[in-house]
Image (cartoon, rainbow, N blue to C red; front, side, top):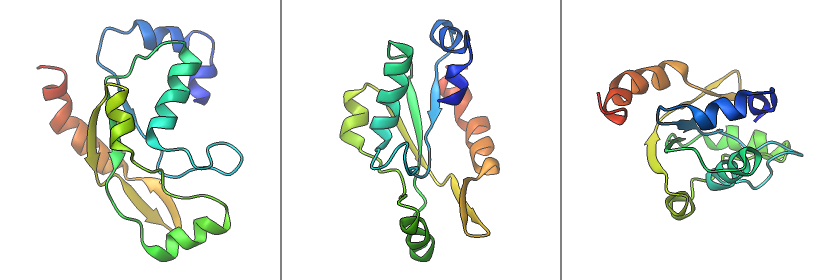
Length: 128
C-alpha cells in the first residue's frame, strides 16, 4: 500500500495494459491489518485505487513452523488467511506457492521462489 500513496503510482497501475499479479502479504501487522485475510488486502487496494484492477494473486502455501507462529502471536500478528471464496468473488485467479521463508525467526518472502515462479508462470499468465 505505501507504494500506492506516491502521487501518480495508483493511476499508472490502473492504466497499465499488462495483467496485474498481487504478491500477497505473509503476515498481518499489529495496528494495520489485524485479522485481514488475503481478500481483505485486495479490497483495501481496490478501495484505495477506487477500482478493481488486479487479475491474480500469489499467496503463500508454506505452513510456518508453530514456534514461529507463536512468536508472532506475541506481537498480535498471524499468517494472512487465504480465503479462496472471497478471492474468487473478487474475480481473481489464485496461485498458491511456497513463497515464505524464516530467517532469524522472522517471516519473509522467499525471493528466489517468487522469481522462479515468475519466470515459469508469467509468460503463460501473459499469454506469451
